[in-house]
Image 1 (tube, rainbow, N blue to C red):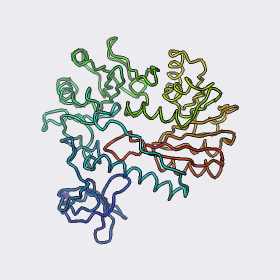
Image 2 (cartoon, rainbow, N blue to C red):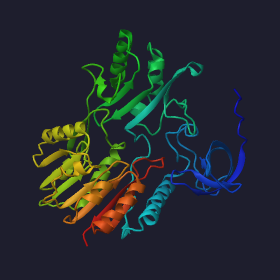
Image 3 (cartoon, rainbow, N blue to C red):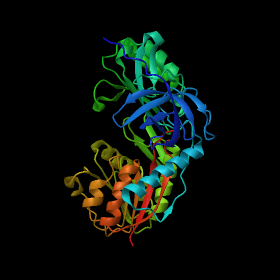
Length: 436
């Protein structure tokens, strides 16, 4: 087999920043995306991937430094792919995310809001409560590696801690490595899913072979020593189960309402930002005691239950049977008799047919990255007074804005960034639409 030639480093001037937070330059007329580079910098970079219309590269040396560059707070920022923008100051990160959101709205929808909301911001460090950590047993590096993948490489980064993960887990990576090294199947554990609430910290260990009795005893001892609940996943997501009866249950509180969840359930990654986001959504919905609100893509009831505390009624709809079940349980547990929940595939006409929108006055949309295309095209929303749309993907938001304004006849009132994932290129946003 011929050994691949090492790609020669090259010099490049960086002109712009891509939506993904990579520097953009041109080399011999071809666009190059350079991870770790900022506009105005001259860098020495190395190509990691070639495409027909562009190349991808990673910084090896910075020759001319941008005044916007800062020293990353995390010692692993140079290699770990968990964050992509630690070298850019927090205020500049917000400016970049604002630019991404409003450029996409302008160029892809052709429609801009009447005014822009100030960015909603929260904690910068130790904020991350949900994550999927890779695990790889590498004897040459001392055994198990636990963390995110390296930048521009498929390997698990060799890190000892994580500054953006909640410290309950972010400062326990070395302990996790030692735990896995001592198990009988250290090379058969490909990932660990992290889930953290206000009450409870959980790790879900995916294991490809059965644990020995001594392994289960070691896991139980780790659970006692760290107060981290251990869940096991021998197969698909349906196979997830607690290690034993002592495994901690998970919950968080918003607006005085306690929401229980399972470790594999979708919850917002940033607990403090979630509270601030709920406050903003409630403010923008302008709920009064006569409003009947629909919360589509309601999940566990994260927005539904705070809405129920203010509205005449709320109807939540969601495509996951398990999430609907827990949303109903959370409503009962918190004594909300005015909250109902419907299981419906909101991307399909058959699912939309299950929704009774009679009397609904206001609508909250919080879709996944694929957006709310079927809803804004197929449902008749013209009787609504206001729509609030929480988006985790500005591309699909821009697409849906066109339908909400041009088809449904709403005015695009305002929009703004919510910094749910500091130090990454992820753009969370909120948009508000009103009847003319």
